[in-house]
Length: 148
Image (cartoon, rainbow, N blue to C red):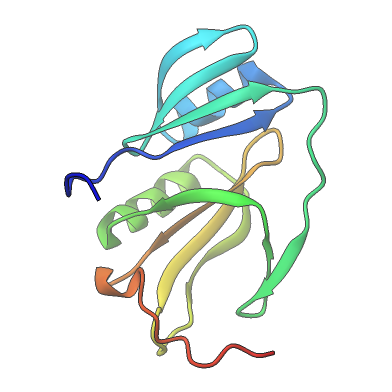
């Protein structure tokens, strides 16, 4: 499938307050701004292209139980290196960001163990930052049988 170079992912997402979103993504998450229009803003997010699109109201959000926590079923984020994840955690804590699900090790002692944390942007979009000590676990299939 093409060359082996990992290409940037593109994600468009809704926001109700574009200036607040721009400020959050640049000042809190360290994104840089690309093209801007009154109704949208292109952002560089950890090497990926995300685009905030202004809408009148946000869609409702469901949650799903994962490892004993209510995880927002609609979210996006990035898999960081182990040290980068800890730096992001420290940055978010230093900036006083409220965690939806605070930093912890999910599935500890199991295949797929991962550091994870969830935050919310000013419009209510949920973002997850996760990391694996062993990147081979990112796409590991060793979850066991799926309950019917």
